[in-house]
View 1 (spheres, rainbow, N blue to C red):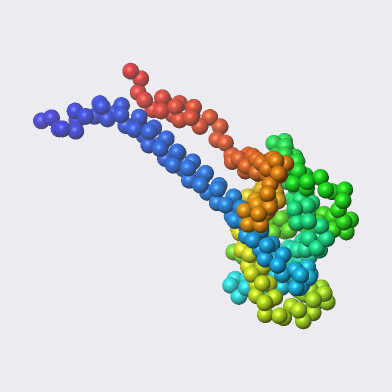
View 2 (cartoon, rainbow, N blue to C red; view 1 turned 135 degrees about the horizontal axis):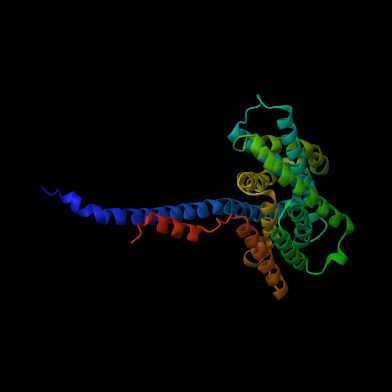
Length: 333
C-alpha cells in the first residue's frame, strides 16, 4: 500500500534545503532589524539628554539674575542629589576603594564642569560658551579613536562648532573664554569617569553618589556668592526645575547611553549641543538663523550621524554567504 507521505518525499528532499535557506535568511534579516533598533536606543538617549539640557538652560537663564552663576549650580546639584538619592537609594557598602575613587572623580568632574560653564555663561554669550566647551569632548573623540574615519568626523564637527562661534572669538572676555575651555576639559573627564562609573555601579547608583560629591563641592561656593537668596521660594522652585531638566534627566540618559556607546562616539554626538541650542533659540526665543548658522548645524549633525553609522559593525559577505549556503544545501540536478 502506497503511503501518502512517500510520494512527497522526493519533492520534500529538494524543497527542505531551500526552505531552510529562506527561513535562515528571514531570521537573519529579523535579527539585523533588531540589532539596528537596539543600536538606535543609545542614540535616542543622548539626543533626549541634549534636549533636556537646553530647556534646563532656558530656566537657568531666568534664575541667574536672582541667584548668580554659582548659586544656580548649587541649587541645581543639591536638588538633583536629593532626588537621585531618594529614587536610587544606592548601596553604600560592598564597594572597593577603586569604586569609590571612580565615583569621587566623576563627582569632581561633574561639579567642575557645571561651575566653570556657568561662570563662562556669566561673561560670554551662550552660543560661544557652548562652542568652546564642546572642544573638550571633540578632543577626546580624536584621542580615543583608532580609526581615520572617526578623526574626519570629529574635524567636520569641529568645523561646524567653529562656525557657530560666529567669528567673535577675538572679542571674547579672556576669563569667560578660559572658563569655557576649562569646562570643556572637565566635560571630557566627565565622559570618561561617567562610563567607568556606569560599569562599576548598577543602574544610576553611581550617578547619585557622584551628584552628592558634586553638590558638596559646590555648596560652599554658592552660599558665599548668594547666601540667603538661595532660600527664596521662587528661587528654590526654579532651581528644582533646573535640577530636573539639566541634571537628573540628562545625566541619567547619558549614563545609560555610555553603557552602550563607545566614549569617542558619545563625545562626537555631544557636538549636537550647540546645534540644538541654536534651533531652540530659533523656535522658542525667535532668534533667526543665518546661512552660516544653518551650515554649521548641518556640519555638526552630519558629523554626528557619520560617527554613529561608523560604529555599526558590518558583517563581511553576508548576502554572498547566504547564497553559498543555499547552493550547498540544494541537491545537484
